[in-house]
Amino acid sequence: MSINNIQLNPQLCRILFSNHLINEKLTIKNAEIIENTTIASLGGNGKKIIFLINNSENSFLGEEEMDMLNNLLTACKITMEDIALINYHQNGHIKYEALINQFAPKKILIFGVTPAQLELPFHVPFFQLQKFQQQIYFLSPSFENFLTDTALKKELWIGLKKLFLS
Image (cartoon, rainbow, N blue to C red; front, top):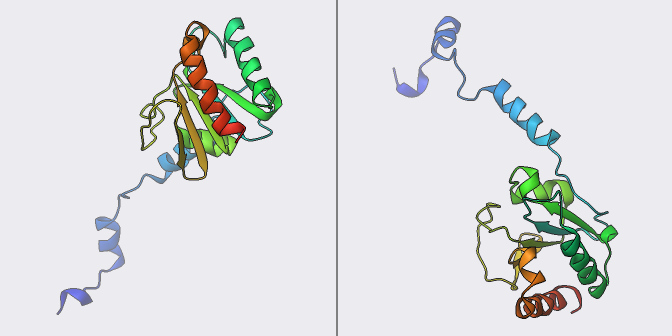
């Protein structure tokens, strides 16, 4: 008798394979949790652009930061209806796949969140455009830094012009 021709009777199969390698109930439950988790955002996401910020003090941004964001949007010829503003801190430290699944973005601007925190497989310097899969990523220091540092604000503007006005 060869090892390739072993035949097991039904009783022996039940004994040998009584446990599954994959817990089907747990897998289904995890999939349901992922599907039912929605990321809170502000804006209409009309042009599929994510502005991901990291602010532990506000649901989204403070008043001064929101004014600055509105000025940036106006300069880039977009509005709040065109973007989805998402606070990383308030959304349970989300990963980039969740952003992709819910918002289907074309551009993702990241302020104050590292690629490692999002589980992105790359790291690039601030204000540099990075294409990955179907999106363009733009990393930047935290939004609060731009309120007091004009040199940093100039670098941000140069990067945003490449992203939106080129």
